[in-house]
Length: 266
Image (cartoon, rainbow, N blue to C red; front, side):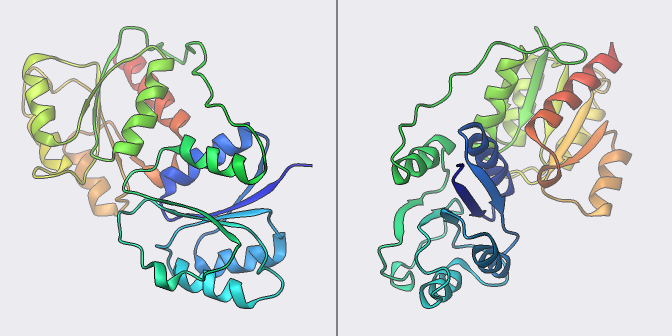
């Protein structure tokens, strides 16, 4: 019988990656939208393990853990505290109970670390999966150059592995300055650009790219957690080929869109 795991984590990207990896390892997964939803699903689903973030909307992780410790229905459910926000954790607010099995508190969490801790709780052995053979998508990725501008290290590391398995040549830049420095030397086949970046925001970088004769025909995908209609409209008016919201797309959908954009350009 598959172990049931409930994830109540504010980082949508991390949640999606963990859900995929946990399912691959044979676990049944559920997600909670906020602290209140996490408590309700603990009661209705009786999961075998809960991965909980301290930073949650509605009821935060501290409040959820306190309420859980008082409720006989759910008090014995094991918990791993997972925090990817970099916010200092107030340990005195976390109940001192044997059901808190482990902690993963750091600025950028590697999914394999979480999987190892989960496996330990269920007395399983965990071996990180090796990347499979390269897959071919519409338009193909072999030899195509992608400039990926993103300051989120977790997302960058995960997505770069995805790009490598599909045959793309990926260059990562963590801010607009690094991106523009690269673009002085190279003309990529496509650019993926976040809006929120250090120093120069992504919309300003997009405007600079589209004003450059060398680069104006390079398709640019805006990939951001910002989903305001005004940002979407501005990105399109500046020449973005596509606007994708991180929380609403999977990694495979990003790769597929990149491949399609390059194919349409050819």
